Amino acid sequence: MSAARPTVLIPGGINARVRERVEAEFEAISIAAADATLLDPEARARIDGIACSTAITADFIDAFPNLSVIASFGVGYDAVDAKHAASRGVMVTNTPDVLSDEVADTAIGLLLNTLREFPKAEAYLRAGRWAAEGAYPLTPLTMRGRTAGIFGLGRIGLAIARRLEAFGLPIEYHTRTKRNDVDYPWHDSLAGLASAVDTLIVVVPGGAATEKAVNADILDALGPQGVLISIGRGSTIDETALIEALASRRIAAAGLDVFANEPNVPQALLDLPNACLLPHVASASVSTRNAMADLVVDNLAAWLDGRPALTPVPECAGLDRKPG
Ligand code: NAP
Ligand code: 8YV
Image (cartoon, rainbow, N blue to C red):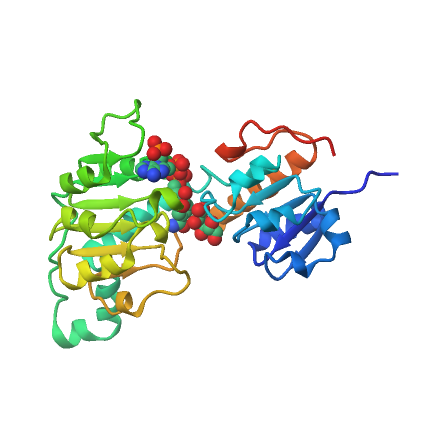
């Protein structure tokens, strides 16, 4: 007789490959949202693992007495209460590294689109305006001569920096801790970095420590030729201050892949001609999302089989599997 397979809960929507693999490899239970009242107590007691792409609160974690692991789809896990999970002995995993190059590629594309207006130029061509009106206007902004500042020189920030080096840009950065493995000038404050550069690329994690860190003062420090690229979390930008700075041209332009209240984007941002906007697509290729999906399910399989998690979040790094 074979041992019972672990039960994995999927609350809310998730990548299709995660769902297919969870359904093939575990007893799978799906509910519409991360709301424990959607399950009766008997079902809640059966849950060993959670695969998620949604916010997971302390109360939700506490609703599952035998929960052992939460595998989150994405490297950013600011929406999962990992500290609380760790305090309960519950492992939390994320999907680092497998998406870094894709996200860095997107950051470069977004920067070029913001500076050189390629989406607008293509719309101009498609509208027949090239033939009717002549050449698309010269762009006031260019990558040439810029200095890049990276706010968050982690896995993705470094991949962006390496690409920008190839474009000939000097790089500076701000993190809480200076890195010893790079020669780029380090700033001990975000304000110091923003004053030193004209192109600020934001790729820090979300959460309380970075909430609205990019505010009116930081944008003013960036200056009238300044360009902001935001590819980390929308919560890091004070969107009201950004809209005012763009509208009054206190900074030149912004390229945003992430927003404070996704998928809702303020109308004021949509109306601004100097904002280049993407719907949170930095990692959104089939191959990269498949790699993320496999890491989610491989983490569940390892932990629920009594092996170490492949990519535990730092809060859970020292955690041992509870005997089940
Ligand atoms: P990572 O390797 O952990 O890097 C994070 C960097 O931010 C580190 O250099 C860290 O350095 C710095 N940092 C963290 N908190 C900070 C603070 N309060 N002040 C200053 N610096 C701080 O993470 P990653 O893999 O590069 O991913 C970064 C983030 O990108 C994710 O958390 C996620 O939110 C976002 N992301 C977005 C997309 C997208 O689709 N747009 C895709 C992937 C990831 P210190 O610890 O020394 O401060
Ligand atoms: C995904 C991300 O869009 O990894 C992250 O932190 O923001 C993105 O790769 C997200 O996790 C899933 O939709």
